[in-house]
Image 1 (cartoon, rainbow, N blue to C red):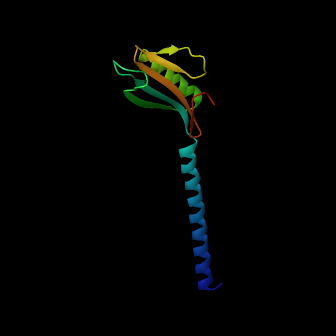
Image 2: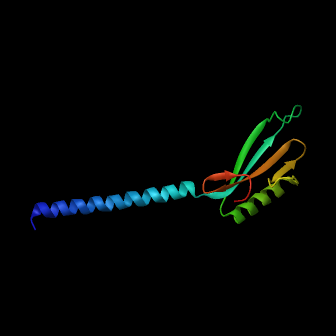
Image 3: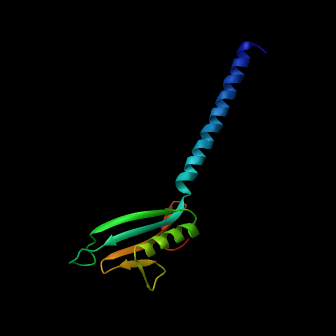
Length: 118
C-alpha cells in the first residue's frame, strides 16, 4: 500500500466518522426539539370593566415531563394559587380565580399542543 492510498483511506475514514457524528447530532437535537411532552397552562384575565371578548393579559407556563408528572405539577400549582376547576360540558380543563382570572390547560405531546389529553 502506497502512502497516497493510505492517506486517501484515512481521509475517507475521517469523513465517514464525521458523517456519523453529524447524523447522530441531528437526530439528537431533532428528538429534543420535537419529542417534548408536558402541560401548558395559559392564564388570561379580563379588565375590571368590559366584555369577555376583551382579554387584558395572557401568560403561559410550561410544566415539562411525562403527562402524569406534568399534570401533578400543574394541579399543585393551580391549588397553591387558589384556582378552582370550572365544570364545562367539553373535555377542556378550565380553571378560574375570582371573577376575572382564568387558566386553561393544554397538553404538549411530540411538539403538538392539544386541548385534550393525547
